[in-house]
Image (tube, rainbow, N blue to C red; front, top):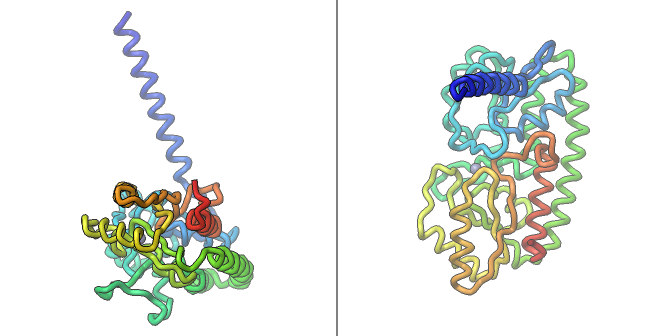
Length: 313
Ligand code: ZN
């Protein structure tokens, strides 16, 4: 009796496993029938391009919500996706450092473009060692240059639809211009002395430049860098100096170091709050507002606005 039960269970278990495998395959599959199949790295490229490409494109991004592009390594499945695609679009400027070799190889067979490398060099930020800051999507004007470059590549690939791509892009860029105005208005409401953005890694340099905010990242431009005790202590000192009300966690980064900062400041008598989660290198879940570039950006602006004005939880 006992044994029979076991057999039944194991049969049920393998049926469930098969079901799981089918379900997984289904959600992973992109219907590319009659469409230009584009593979991107980050969703910040994929989602706007799906609007610009409209019905003519099928787009998938290799990196989903919560995924850190600095550390990302290609899986076998990714290589297959790259090989099956018509075109590959990545951001570049050393954001996706571990994928460059794969891109060089695949670039011998099809268009592979680092869209952010179209941004004029004098507009880029660097760290103290001269490394380029790759987080250009936080400057809407710069991200428009990247998306423009992607659109041109798309037009070259499918000239028959070029007018449609151009029209879609122009319409989308109007929304981006509105987003920029809205963001400037919101940040302007925060008093200058409270405009300090403290996060886990240095992803917000362009954001800070665009809205006149000081940014402090515990970690450098890439999450590959180590966080030391001195980084945590230095950050606590800044919080105390400026009486910063809140620090922020990033959706794609471990929260421990930023929590250590909150705790350390607390021991020194400053009540610093976790201002909420903001998106740095990854966006939210597909199908939610934060799964779009505009929704992700608006979430960050709203979260920062609320927390720095002291209206946070
Ligand atoms: Zn980053």
